[in-house]
Image (cartoon, rainbow, N blue to C red; front, side, top):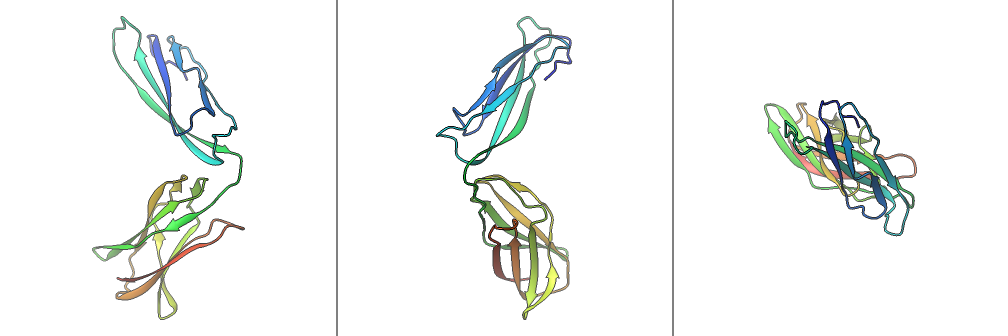
Amino acid sequence: MRNDGTEQVVVDILRRTVATRWLQISPERLLLGPGRSAVLTLRAKVGRDAEPGDHQVLVLLTTRPQHGSRVALRLRLGVRVSVRMPGTIVRRLALGGIRVHRRRGLRLIFVPVVNRGNVTVQLRGHVTASLFRRGGRVARLHLTARPALAPGARTLLALRYAGRVRGPVIAVVQIRMGPGVQLVERRYRLRL
């Protein structure tokens, strides 16, 4: 971290996470003169209260001017840090119900997904979705966003369909997380 300003500033460092004793940040406060820089150190140590898997940490850096400064400007910067603690890794996703939104010939199909495991899952390149009628595939759906999903987090898979098929179909949504990990699949009856 560097102070590019012309005045001395104080930087308070705060972490926002469920992690407590096993995560340490030092120092907790910095005094930076003009043009000066400093290094923050984040240490994660294995302990009894540290659950295995991924932990998301938000480190907040908040500046405040020194007493008697000409300009009282505050700046807050958030830095996201991911810490993976050793132990048994669990990759488990669950798909929820389905909703269809119609807009000018375009169909957006939303499927909620929740990460019930203990590691962050990258959904990019792992989600496939297709529409079937009478046993044959009539369309492939396109995922409009490919988020990463942290442990305990949930998101909506937004699937786009602009084809001409209308009426009852079966949508099949699959998430393949790699070798040795169980395929997540759910079938939905819906009307386009």
